Length: 197
Ligand SMILES: [Zn+2]
Ligand SMILES: [Zn+2]
Image 1 (tube, rainbow, N blue to C red):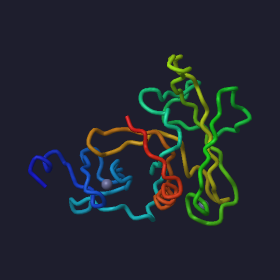
Image 2 (image 1 turned 30 degrees about the vertical axis):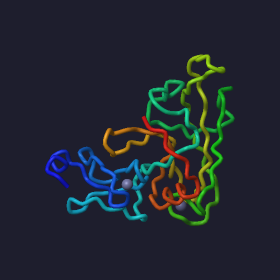
Image 3 (image 1 turned 90 degrees about the vertical axis):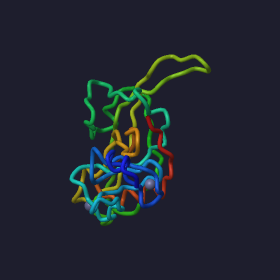
Image 4 (image 1 turned 45 degrees about the vertical axis):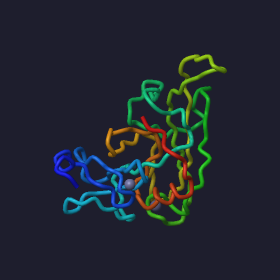
């Protein structure tokens, strides 16, 4: 690692050897090159242990909706990022609804115990609308994901912005989990690519 890299706090990913920028954080760093969560230990980037459990949903995985990117992401109905409404779908308006067709890892997304219920996440976002080559402006859609939980836990996941720490500090939109091991398993089962901006 050269002096310029050291001064800029650039560190090499131990998994893929891509470069990450460690100015803003020393743990929970997401490598956009290989999708690994890393942390600094003794000035070296290492993989975060899969047992890591964050206090709130933090570890992000890509979602299948490629148009929820860029400055297009705005919360409808006056919701302020990163608020996520855990609402009943029946109360939603007649917005377009997209249900996430994901394969869920076995067990509760917080602790891995047998899952006994699904918690429904919803988030309103605006996406570009077009008809053929005509651009018709944005429209609001409601994203829905039903996430396995045990009876003891709730709020183990959210639909939200995900920061990357590779050079350029890009953002993506995805589903966040509290438990890194569950997030990694989710990514293996649903290897959707990130849309970054
Ligand atoms: Zn990497
Ligand atoms: Zn649980």
